[in-house]
Amino acid sequence: MKTLFFISSVLLTALFSSAHAVPNNRSYSCDSPIFCEGPILKAVQMAGLFSDSKTFVDMPTKKPEVEVLKAFEKINGANASRADIKQFLEDNFMPAGTEVTPLHNINIPKLDWIDDISNPDYRGWAEHLNEAWGNLTVTFDYSNLCHGCVTSALPVNRPFVVPGGRFREFYYWDSFFVIKGLILSKQFKLAEDMIENFFDFIEEYGFVPNGARIYYLNRSQPPFLAHMIDVYYEETGDKDFLLKALPILEKEYHHWMRDRSIEVTNPRNDNVYTLNHYAVNNKYPRPESYVQDFNTVNTGTDFSDEEKEQLYADIAAGAETGWDFSSRWTRQKQPSPDQVENYEMLRTINTANIIPIDLNSLLWYYERQLSTWYSMFHRKSKEFKKKSIYYRQQAKKRLDAMEELMWNDDFNSFYDFNLTSNEQNVEYTPATLYPIWVGAFPEKFMKDKTTLSKVFDQTEEALQKYPGILTTSYYNTTLQWDWPNGWPPLTYIAIQSLRQVELLLNSERNSNDSNIVASTSQGTSFNVLSTVLAERYAASAFCGWINTGGSIPGVLEKLNSSTEDAGHMFEKFDVNTIGLSGSQGEYVSQIGFGWTNAVALWVLNLWPNFTAPDCTQTIVYDF
Ligand SMILES: *[C@@H]1O[C@H](CO)[C@@H](O)[C@H](O)[C@H]1NC(C)=O
Ligand SMILES: *[C@@H]1O[C@H](CO)[C@@H](O)[C@H](O)[C@H]1NC(C)=O
Ligand SMILES: *[C@@H]1O[C@H](CO)[C@@H](O)[C@H](O)[C@H]1NC(C)=O
Ligand SMILES: *[C@@H]1O[C@H](CO)[C@@H](O)[C@H](O)[C@H]1NC(C)=O
Ligand SMILES: *[C@@H]1O[C@H](CO)[C@@H](O)[C@H](O)[C@H]1NC(C)=O
Ligand SMILES: *[C@@H]1O[C@H](CO)[C@@H](O)[C@H](O)[C@H]1NC(C)=O
Ligand SMILES: CC(=O)N[C@H]1CO[C@H](CO)[C@@H](O)[C@@H]1O
Image 1 (cartoon, helix red, strand yellow):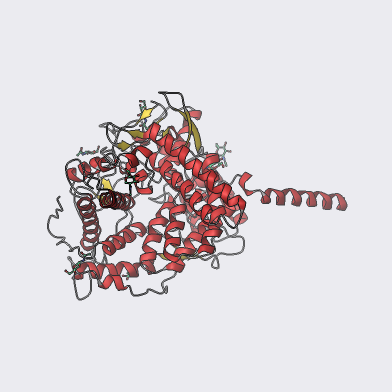
Image 2 (cartoon, helix red, strand yellow):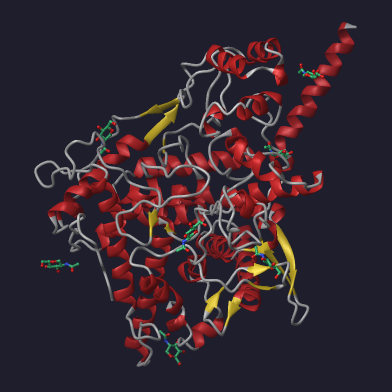
C-alpha cells in the first residue's frame, strides 16, 4: 500500500509539474469557493448588505478558509437568513482592502518643470498632484492575514499605483496613463515596478488580467503594455529592460491572437481577414458586480439558460473593453422611456459581435513595435530578424483589414465593424482616433495627405457641440461610457493625435512645399483644437477639485470653508459643464484618481502658460 501510494503521488507530482511547464495551455479562472461563483458568493451578494458588490469580494477572511466554509454550513448555507449572513461576515471577514497597505513615505522629488507653470493656481495644483502619488501608491501586504486565510488579491511582488476609490488594486489600461504621469513626476522606479508586475502576470497567467484580483482572471483590458514599454524605454533608454520585455510582450500578443481573434469576411469581395474582438468565456455574474449582473440577466426577464449565459459572457466582455458600459456594445442605443435601471439597455449587449477599432489599433501597435524592437536587436540572433519580418507582415495585414473594413471615405473616419450587420457602425466616438494616435495610417493617407487633414472634422464638431471635454458618444443612455461623460484617457489620445498629425503635416510642408495645412475642413488649426481641448481638460479637473474643497495654501482659499472635503479629482467629467464630475453607470463616480491626475500633469507640462479659471463663473473656451 505504502509503495503504491508513493508511486501515485510521484506520478501526480510529475503530471502537476508538467502542467506548470506549459502555462499557455493552463486555464486560469476564478476558483475560490468564497470569492468566485458558488453558494457563499451568491448568498452574501444577494443579501444586499453593501451598496457596492465589490466590497464583499475585497474582504479577506480572518479565519482559515476551511473554517469559513464550515461556518457558512452552520448558518444553513444557501438558506441562511440575512441576519445570520451579517453575523457570518462579522465573524469571518476583515474589512475590504485590509491587505492593501499605503506607502505614504514614497519620496516625492521636486520637479523643475512645475516652476515654469506661469499661473500660481495651476502651479500650486500641479505640486499637489505630484504629491498625490504618495496617497495612491500601495502594496499588498499579507502579513496581517492568518495562516490559511484567503483574499481575492492576486500576489504581486512590487508596489503599484491604484486609481483610487473602490479601485483598490491596479488596473491594466489605467496604468498606462498613470505611468505617463509617474514619468513626468520622476517616479521612474515606481513606473518600472508597475510594468514588471504586468510582466509577472504574463509569465504566470499568459495574459494581463483586467486588474489584480482573482475575479478578474478571465478577462483582460485594452492592451496598453506595448505603450507602457515604449514610454519607459523612451525615457530611460534601458536596452536590457527592452530585451527582457520582448518575449513577454510577444506572449501577451499570442494570447490576443489565440483567444480573441476572429475571421471576418469582407462582404464586398469575400476577402477574409483576421481581426480581434473582446470576448470572455464566462457564464456567471461578475463577482464584483454580482447584484447588478444578476438583475440585468434575471429580473423581469424570460431568457433561456443559454441566453443568460450568453448575456453574462457579453457583459464580462463589455468590462474587458475598458468602456464598461457603452452604446458601442449594445444593440439598443436609447433606453426606453420607462427604464428605471440601466438593466434594460444592458440586456441588449452584444460585445463579441463588434470588431473595435481601438483594440485593433492597439494590437497593430504591438505588431509594429515588436517588428521595430526585434530589428533593433537583430545582431543578437537570426531568430530576431525573422521575428521582425513576421511582425511587420502581421502589421501590414491588419492595416489592410482595418482600411478595407473599418475606414469610411465619406466621413473620413474609422469605425467599429458590426458582425451582425456586416457593416461599420457609423457613430462618432473618440475610439476613431486610436489609429491616428498609434500611427496606423493606410498607404493612401501617406500618398495624399488631404485625407489626413480631415480626420479631425468630427472631433471638431463634438468640441463645438459641448463646452467641456470630448464627449464619449452622442447617445444619452445612462451608461457611463456615453454622453454626457468625457474621460481623461480619451482626452489624452485626442490631444496627442492632433499634435502628431500637426507635426507630420507641418514637416511635410516645410520639406516638400506641400499646400496641405494642419487644419480641419472648417479651417480650425489642429493646434487650436488641441489647445482648446487641453484647456478644457485642465479647467474641468481643476474646478472639479476646487468645487469640492481643494485649496492651495497661501495661493487659493477653499471656496466653501465649511466643507471638510479637501478636493476630489474625478475619474470622469460632464461635457456640458466645466467643473462637474461625470455620473451614471454601475457604481458611483470615483475620486482619487490615477489617470485624471496623470493627464492633468501632462497637460500642464505641455502648456505651462494656461491660466486657471475662476471656478465660480461659467467657464467657456471657444475656438
Ligand atoms: C435549503 O432549503 C431547501 C428547501 O427547504 C432544501 O431543499 C435545501 O436542501 C436547503 N439547502 C441548504 C444548503 O440547506
Ligand atoms: C493625502 O491624504 C491625506 C489624508 O487623507 C490628506 O490629508 C492629504 O491632503 C492628501 N494629500 C494629497 C497630496 O492628496
Ligand atoms: C449591429 O447591427 C445590427 C443590425 O443592423 C443592429 O441591430 C445592432 O444594433 C448593431 N449592434 C451594435 C452593438 O451596434
Ligand atoms: C437623457 O436621458 C435621461 C434618462 O433617460 C432623461 O431624463 C434626460 O432628459 C435625457 N437628456 C437629454 C438631454 O435628452
Ligand atoms: C516629398 O515628396 C516626394 C515626392 O512626392 C516624396 O517621395 C517624399 O517622401 C516627400 N517627403 C516627405 C518628407 O514626405
Ligand atoms: C510662456 O510665457 C512666457 C512669459 O510670457 C514666455 O517667455 C514663454 O515663451 C511662454 N511659453 C510657452 C510655452 O508659450
Ligand atoms: C465569474 C467567473 O468565474 N467566470 C468564469 C471565469 O472563467 C472560467 C473559464 O476559464 C469560467 O468557467 C467562469 O465561469
